[in-house]
Image 1 (cartoon, rainbow, N blue to C red):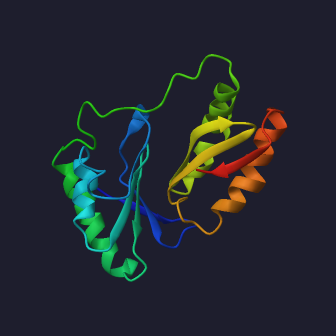
Image 2: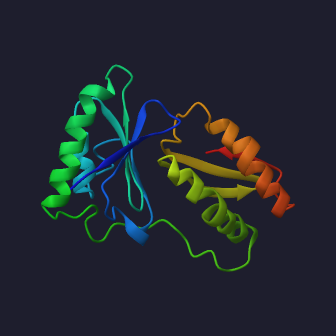
Length: 182
């Protein structure tokens, strides 16, 4: 198994591409503590590496965020080994029964329109950088989004939200007045 790595706009985050499905069409999963990762044997295994502070699982990639005190040159080989062992052993990425907090948004509401635009125009581009932007809520003209993976804590994430996502949503949905990070 050959695992590719890619840098992300966030210098504390690296994207690992194992060449196979990670989450596939099941969505994404974001873990910032080992306790949150209880249902993911892969994330738990990665959290065993000293210096790992976040795991984001995408359709075909794993994004790992490190603490500032650790260097990628020491962490990267350990993480590559853990990912390779996990997949060659055939273990599940997420154990069956994981709750999915994504609601059905096919009802034509403003929230559904926002989700559709995010899913088709924003999330695929953000996934290329090893992250995700997840809809939280829409209240009084304000869209609240949660940044995950490489996007969480990235220096350019606020610019992405304001200049990219906010402008696009305001263009297509006049009811949107502002976008904020949740």
